[in-house]
Image (tube, rainbow, N blue to C red; front, side, top):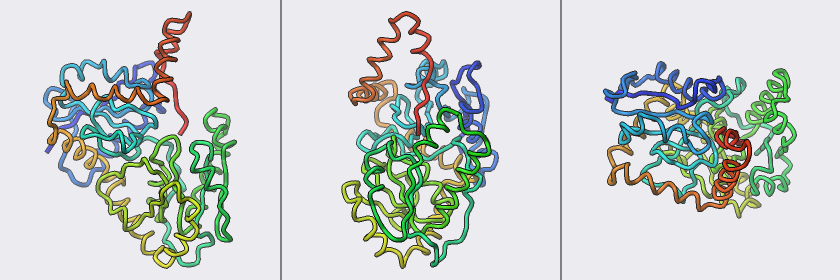
Length: 343
């Protein structure tokens, strides 16, 4: 049994519902936890784990987390949960946005907490007579494979590029009524489909994968760099297609169509077992404990390997940009403010 501190390094003047949403949901999951094995504590000295649950309030590169007094005092029991794209795992923990090639013994593939909840992503029983063999509704410019998938043609497919809606959501120009309508259309399309395309976006992982499982449909994963979260029997209910073979998707799904109902039911069952609110806290703690138990190198030394991520073009360019802003007039304040990356 582990005693766990859940917290965020988000500063008081930025503690909005937006930035604290992952932490709030993690605490809610702890309250709903059906395992009753691990518990929360407010005492970091007595805790077995200290888990920072972050969105963007901790800094783009988790500067506020890395400088946090608890990290400096209890480094070996500090962990980080984050489902943002394009992250660097400066702390050991659970990340959905780390590419498989960059995964190490310090990280575990993750899931999502604190994202905007779509109230329409409820479960409906799958059926043989659904109108669409496969579908996709989302922004195509976030990844090359999405644009390629938009060229597919099939008499029972539906594909909608929502780039304009996506921009309005990011710019907060979509009012509540419009957003509810968007969420409803997205959920209704998923439920009307036997298979749902889940290509990578900015991150190898995609929240639509977990939403598809929640609604009880078969996810079709096109994300070569994606690292599978531990636990679910992915091969039994999901279909993973190499990105280069995107043109084969219609044929593959026609061949798997007789098994769609069975796979859909299993997808929902695996979501309930591994990703529902009643189990997420337990599995998050277990993943952190697994990292801790299998640690071969002290975290005080192992943490430096994370800086190799700055060799990636995106992070290298951004690091240079941050350095430039830091020395330019009025740039210090801007450089210190976390920037929100579109999903």
